[in-house]
Image (tube, rainbow, N blue to C red; front, top):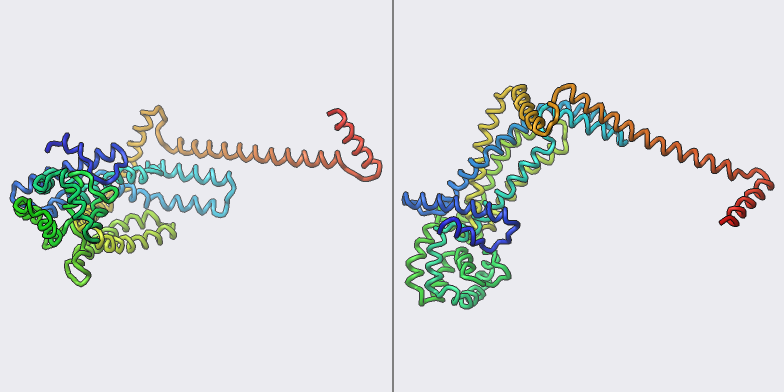
Length: 426
């Protein structure tokens, strides 16, 4: 199956957008190339494929990881100045002070060539890629053409679309099989296409495959010929990657291997990442405490999730965390040796090139001072306008009090006369 044909099949998970669908299919195409390459070398295994696939995606995403590391290094350098500004305006909640504080903090970021929203932008770019990776691994036959072949051979042998009703009946013959319809992300809980059958079959464990073979005895030869290939593809260190660790039962060692390794790998990776993040949060005790809590909560969540997800997802998490940890270790060493002044100069030069394209003046000390002065003038103008409104209101109140000042019966009579005159004029 070529790439054009591959992009026409989108599986059964909901499509968020055409762009996301395109990213998913690109990932599937890359994984298919890896699978073909390893199969040529005699290693027909989805687990190995997932690990190599993770390495490739980590390499592709390395520029973003480098930029994040650089941003954290710069953030740790500018934190003392940010902290001094926050201390300067501590306890001042008026609009003028808030505007000035924001302007001075912005000037510090620009002084170091750091964008206040740079981290968010990188996260926005990475999120679709990460979700696409999960999408492919959760439903491998839908996007990896080479993996789909043995499943397609079985579907063809049982009758293709003509067997949909029979497979539906089989899927609803027990509670365990019915749950697989949800695991396979089959919309509405009913198989509607031959591709749905493939998604369902991918999630069967060895015992359920025996039940399927007995239920479709007419295709027993095709199942016997193709199931060993499927079993070999899904078997990774004695664990079936298409099933969750819970399928082995909590008393089995196999149930604990992947979840525990996933938790430990992520804990090690987050500890390495937190070294630079903690420095960047220096002075912000609340954020530092939150990050410290997350460093323990995320690995525990990985353990819990890996028990319920297909083991293939657990293998991806382990590989991803190990690679992230190795990558972060070398990035930490690199940025520890990097001169902060050189880093700032490169950042400023890069920012000035972007400003030049927009017709803006370059960033220097004078431009930053002018920016703060403009913010000061704007804040003063807003404060003056606000004070003028207050003064006008006071003047109006005083005028009204003078107008209706009642010190005698004659004043009261005069007020009534003025009121009646106004009423008659209307």
